[in-house]
Image 1 (cartoon, one colour):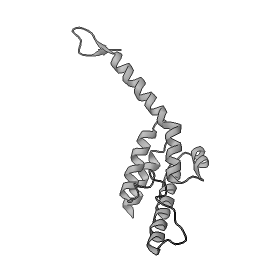
Image 2 (tube, helix red, strand yellow):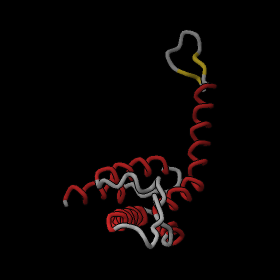
Image 3 (spheres, helix red, strand yellow):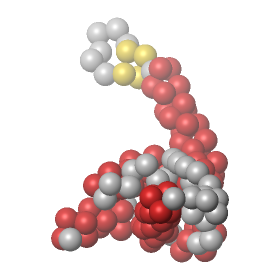
Length: 132
């Protein structure tokens, strides 16, 4: 149990702010992998149950629902308050899609701008440093 709390503290310390979305998502995946729930954020419900479903199907479905609930709680707890209120009624897969829409493009743009600035730097003749 202490391992779970220690790993979850990673997300408490590194709450998602928007620009750090990629880092936050990487840390979230570490936590979910340790809890054996890494499959949850990227997979919507794997199947629908019908009245003729077997007991085994119901158990699998209930296990999935429980895992989604736990992953969702971890994710919501590690968001800033304003994002918590926006996402409190979403499940983990829906929340990940929404957060990627909100912040995924932002991080790509920032990486592009940094790369562009780096590639425009030039080394002057006889110098060991770059001039930007």
